[in-house]
Picture 1 (cartoon, one colour):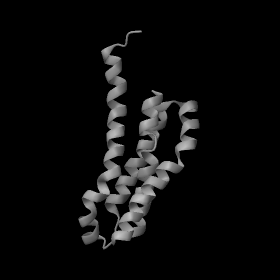
Picture 2 (cartoon, one colour; picture 1 turned 180 degrees about the vertical axis):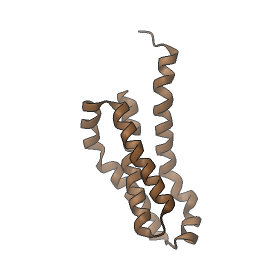
Picture 3 (spheres, one colour; picture 1 turned 120 degrees about the vertical axis):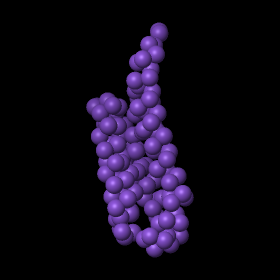
Picture 4 (cartoon, one colour; picture 1 turned 30 degrees about the horizontal axis):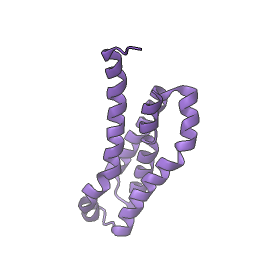
Length: 122
């Protein structure tokens, strides 16, 4: 079985970019923690909660994600979910309270939940 290089790039690049974005969002709290403390006034426990809500929303969608990937395919599912991640990033960037930050991080976790499994399915 031979795979054309163009097809490989058309499949690999978008899914690799999605996974990179997922990994970036996973670690970004450590990088922007001083800014969050200064701008919003959150403490260490709130920073931990922001990281936790990302992982909770990410993990809680894994079972429904498998059904959606089987039914609609990885391109459609990841495309739609990355729109939710973009919405979450927008909400997080515009947040002025801890509640807004939590909602943004939850959307981000939900939105990037398909990045790894969709790449495996493709």
